[in-house]
Length: 297
Ligand code: UTP
Image 1 (tube, rainbow, N blue to C red):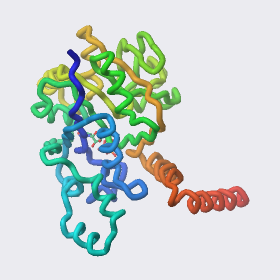
Image 2: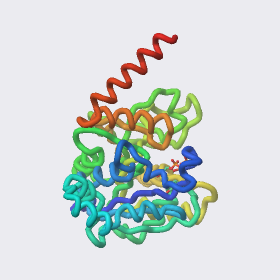
Image 3: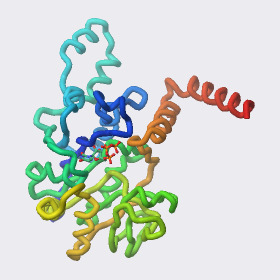
Image 4: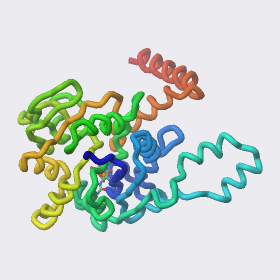
């Protein structure tokens, strides 16, 4: 019987150097798109997909992230006194059922694969999701939910995939597709950051995964053998070498790379324009800005 995916790992122990100096004291995942931190978008996506246990792999300096999910009795009391029901409701989304959230430390930033491996004891013998909060995905149905539904049919490992321009493939893990069936593809291999001109396709791995506990075993071996960064892509590709199934899933939705400044700015504008309370004023501002810019050119 296939087991339901109810656990998700959120690796948030990276240094976030692309956002320095901001990330000197603010975790990247707490940076805000409109009025919600990146991590809230990931949590909402996970909840919509049926995730019940949330495992954060953190590091030094991430206490703001832990505080974010705590109750805030003084704030709640103040809002209640003022009758601010809408703001009290906004806080609701940040609360977690007791015992549903766990924090594990990655003591050194040895790479994404190593961060996921740090959660091995909490995962045990179950399939699990991995979500990178830097990748914010907007769509009618949550990306992870689309994957969980596909995974109920396929089992095995699954990675989210997206077409990127050939000039960008060297920045991503890239899929080598064996056969495709609409959004779902069976893979032959995966290559991490292929050198220019050598990518097997223009389908890139995006930060959503459903993995079997076997991948933790693969990471275990890598930990013993390899130095430097431990790549999650390599541990998943090992499943293919062992003859087990790995699928790519081309999700429906718009993905923003909020780990980069340009992606973060684009997401801010897109989410601002999607909000009924902000849309008109922001659109007017952008129209004016572009008109001035075009006139000046
Ligand atoms: P990135 O490659 O974006 O690295 O990690 P980063 O440190 O967050 O940011 P930059 O590149 O220095 O600006 C992708 C994801 O993997 C996590 C990060 O927190 C992020 O969610 N990660 C990366 C870890 O948890 N541990 C690591 O050792 C490396």
